[in-house]
Structures are given as structure tokens and as C-alpha cells.
Image 1 (tube, rainbow, N blue to C red):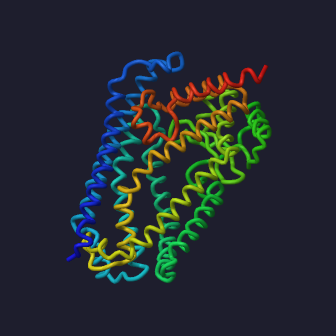
Image 2: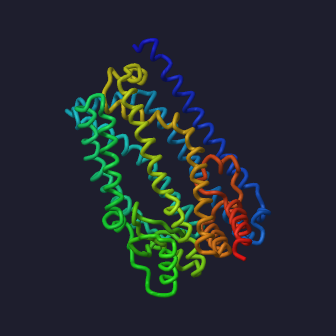
Amino acid sequence: MMGAMGAWVVPVFLVAYALQVGVETLLLGLNLRRASRARGVPPALEGALDEDTATLSRAYVVAHGLASAAEGLLRAGVTLAVLLLGVLPWLDQALGRAGFEGSHRFAGFLVMLAVGSGAIGIPFSLFRTFAVEERFGFNETTPRLWLLDGLKALLLEAALGVPLLYAVYAFMRWSRGSWWLWVFALLVGVQLFLLWIYPSVLAPLFNRFSPLPEGALKTRLEALARAAGFRNRGLYVMDASRRSRHSNAFFVGLFRPRIVLYDTLVANLDEDEAASVLAHEIGHFRRHHVQRRMAFSLLGLLLALWGASLLLRWTPLYAAFGFDGPSLHAGVALLVLCGGAFLFWVTPLSARVSRRQEFEADRFAVELARAPGALKRALVRLAGDNLSNPTPHPWYAAWHYSHPTLAERLARIDDVALARRPAAR
């Protein structure tokens, strides 16, 4: 029997979890309702987006949103069942009866939970890929390629994740009260190591990366990078079209990254538009957004580990969910399953910061490439090619969107270009 001190643990969690699920469901419902009822091109995008694309984009948003709602509700139900119906204590006892103890019990317990969580997502991944993406003309993935990607990801996660669990257990078991500092240092080291090996070892397991062919586009992009003082490890094209028709561009690396363009982006954008996209990405580095995001992420990790170090010693937490006593694996599992309900409220703050950085990168792109029209055309082309929602509900966008809406970005680019005109005369 848990004492009076812990009698409120489950009720508090249930209230927090109900609020999380309720807010997420409400926001998604508002967004889907708005998308399903809207018609035509939004006034702010008239002349930029055609009506057929706007209509198709909203249908795509609804299809994906319904799948997300179904998965979210299923995961919520499974999470509550696992926490409240004694599944975790049963699994713990089963591992004990099978002879798992110490680090093996720690790793085995958490691996089985991860496998269960991943299994829930498999049918939804299949549905999104071969129903939703196929219906809207994006999917290029074959069942064989989908399966191979999944097996590669699973083997990679096992090869990296299982040894990491044993290392985390060793620090937690033998470092006593300071374990959270040692685990933090370990995770920082692992993250930096993965950033280092990702371009040359991990990414090529899933895609081919070829140097951007010689020509006008490469010359233009290299000149743009030099003008910005942007040191990089070269321009590469990724064979994204093997799996999808979506377009994008990204950088790989922290201090001297590779510039990676989807082959679909190279095919769909003209030279000026591609240069404006690259200028935007350079803006993130020149404004130190990547380093700031990592710093805030690591600060959040440090605070989370410190909080975990306090909660793992709190006996009522274990009794509230049916465990006979404290254990490292039970504590970690409970914090992972319950923690999202309390950290969920940080989401809109993180999204707001990200949107502000996107505006800053757009401003940098206008100042560097001096082609606001090309940047606007590129954003409209990418939004159309990816069927981005032209009319998101403002509450949903404020809570979840890491990028400003297309209408907001186009208006801000116009403001930046207008402000620069007197200086250009």
C-alpha cells in the first residue's frame, strides 16, 4: 500500500495527461475542421497559389491529420493501459523470473518498451506511405524498400542504443548522486559523435549522396557560399526521389557542414530559386541558430536529468504504479511514459523560437542573394510541391508550427525588401 504522500500521484498524472490529450485533440480538430471547410485560395496568397493546389493541399492535410488523430488516440489508450493495469510490474517480474538482473534487466526492460512503442507505429507508417502518400502522388517507395529501411533503422538503433543503455546503467549505478552529470556528459559525447559520423557512415545507409554536377547552378551556389563567408564541405545531391516526391534541402554537420539538396529540389527550382533556398539555410548558420538550438536542447537535457535524479529516489512514484520498490529501469520507464504530459506545455515556446529564427534566416537570404522575388517563388513552389497547408488554424500553427505560415513569410519578405530599397539607391 502506498502512503498518503503518494496517493495523489496517479490522479495528478491523469489530470495532466488528460489535459495533454485534450489540448492536442482540440488543436488537431480545429485545424482539420478549418482545412475541410475552407474553399479557394486564401486572400493573402492570391496570385501566388492556384486554386487546385490549395484544394489538394487541404485534402492532404485532412488525410494526414486523421491518421495522426487515430495514432495519437491509440497511443494514449495503450499508455494508460500500460501504466494503470499493472503491465510494467508484470514485465519486470517476468524478466526477473527469466534470470535478468542488474544491467541486463535495465536494458531488457527498456528495450521491450521501445519495441512495443515502435510496433504501434508500424501500421500507421504503412498507411501513410502506401495510402496517403500514394493517393497524393508522393510515394515512390516500394514495399521491399520500405521493409529494408525499417530493418536498417532497427539494426542501427539496436547497435547504438543497447550499448548506450548499458553505459547509462553503469553511470547510474556507480556514480551515486552525481550520476546525472556523468550521463549528461555521456549523451553529449554520443550526440557529437553521431553528428560527426552521420554524413559519411549513417546517412549513406539509406540514401546516395553525389556531388552536385558541374554547371551554372553549382557555380552560383558556391559563389553565394563564398560571399557569405560560409565554410562547408561541399554541395551534394541526395536521391530523395527513390522514396518520395517531396522537396527539401538541409545541412549535415555542426561547424563545417555539407550542403545537401534533394534531387527533387534541383529538378523543380530554377537557379535563382535554388540560390535563395541555400541563402536561407546559410542564414541559420550565420545567425548561429544551429548552435543555439543545440545549446537549448542540451540545457533541457541537463535539467531533465537533474529532475530525474530527484524523482528516481522518490518511493511513492513506484508504489503508485504497482511496483514493489524502486529500481532504475522502472523509474526511467515511468518518467518517459509520464513526463510528456508535463513537458508538453513547452511545445509552443519552442515553436515560437523556431519561427522567429526562420524569419531571421529569410531576412538574411534577402540581404545575401538580393532576390526577394526568387525567395518568394521558391517558398511558393516548395509549399505547392509538398502540399503544405495554406490555411492552418492559428492556434494549431502557434502551438505546433516550427516555420511561419507561407502567407506570413511572403508578407515579411516584402517588408524586408521594402525596407532595403532606400539603402539600395
